[in-house]
Image (cartoon, rainbow, N blue to C red; front, side, top):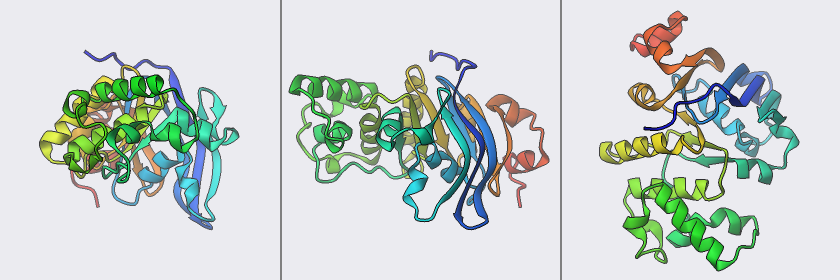
Length: 258
């Protein structure tokens, strides 16, 4: 059994607003917290700001030109905007919607890519240990241990996504951000990823954007419901799904939304 989430917030947004163009806020005055060793699902209709909120948590939203950010995001009580991007992304890893192993790298090179790309030198024995540990943690080691020096293109979609999770956790982050990590996968691969996330929360804190409400209900401890850039409601997933406080949340969860 995976450990229950504790009540200690590891990540907080405080009055966070993000605009891609002047006065057009994709995220508007969002204050929310994420508990340690939990899975938090961010839900809401398309265009509601959930992916922007997620990407802000490791400052990937800053890749867009002319982005405007107000408010703050605290990681262990410290503003992420006071950290270097390299330091922050060592602490807060990211897994994207479509599996995206680096195509010109072997499976082995993919897992330790974070170290290579940041010019962090490791002994071969250290690299070997990191690769095996990360691949074991995503239940991929036994499937690829004879193929570590092949490129990952022969892997199935679900295996490629587990490789991407291994690449993210090889850096030993505190938090793992996942942007609809199963939307490109078949039901069997999706089930494996969901089981994996349940195991990973023993050692990591996970924040997940999902369109799939049944997935949020199955695997998340807490949920955040967004609408038009605003946080409508947040709390324990069981409470949000069975007794939502806001009629917009209820309408979304029952499929009667706009």
